[in-house]
Length: 109
Image 1 (cartoon, rainbow, N blue to C red):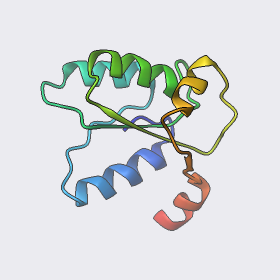
Image 2 (spheres, rainbow, N blue to C red):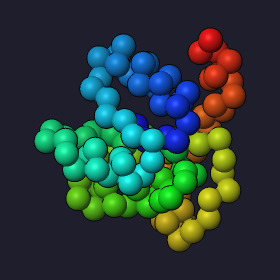
Image 3 (tube, rainbow, N blue to C red):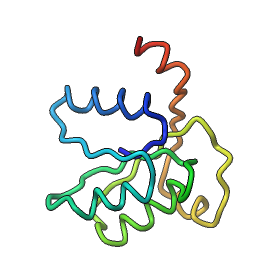
Image 4 (cartoon, helix red, strand yellow):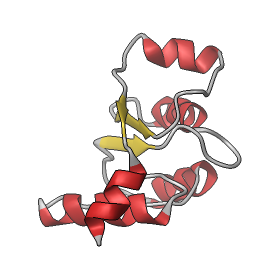
């Protein structure tokens, strides 16, 4: 799970952990790649924000799936404005589910 918003990281981590999943987390793409490279086991799913400081979620997904092609990717974001050739590439294989973090922050209280 990679997101630069602590509230989103905490909420998603808690939901997945309670459902029995092992959760690796990072506050940004570069840290996410480091955490993934240090993890010896499989990574079944990357859940990533799209717009983050530094590298964006598309760049993270490109880098991670280059070394772990079995990893599936789920993008979550409150923004849809990231544009690049990578967005066009990923759009072929993705559906967009906004995370509405303001709604999640209210419900997490």
